[in-house]
Length: 144
Image 1 (tube, one colour):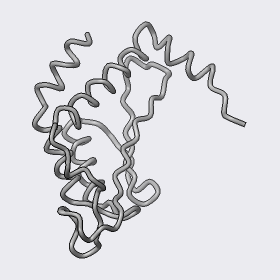
Image 2 (tube, one colour):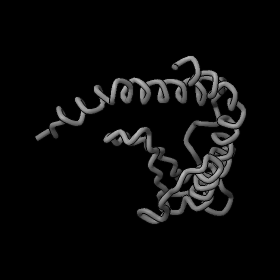
Image 3 (tube, helix red, strand yellow):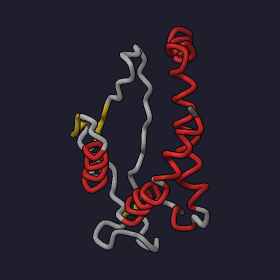
Image 4 (cartoon, one colour):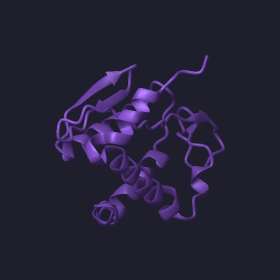
């Protein structure tokens, strides 16, 4: 199964990189990530996923249902920028920029490998009737 996951990510390699590059080159300040939210909604729609939007202004959330598994796994993408007018991809109107992301030389290491690791981790958590994920939920204790 993991090899199928890896193959699927490899199949969409360029699309994944294009999404990362689009976000990099269109930075938006916190609570003003309207272009990014629109991109995420478009991607969810292309995958046939229902979503809720405008959470805390620009947040977008989808629930992936797998065999009625009673487990929630949260994957968060934090994409707001900071003001940095000197950045090569800074928004000329707001100065918004995404840190040193423009220095990424290895797109495989930046976008593809994390996607593979995240997908395989989710698979491991959900296999065997979500045994591992249920244990994490059961054993969770907040720091006091």
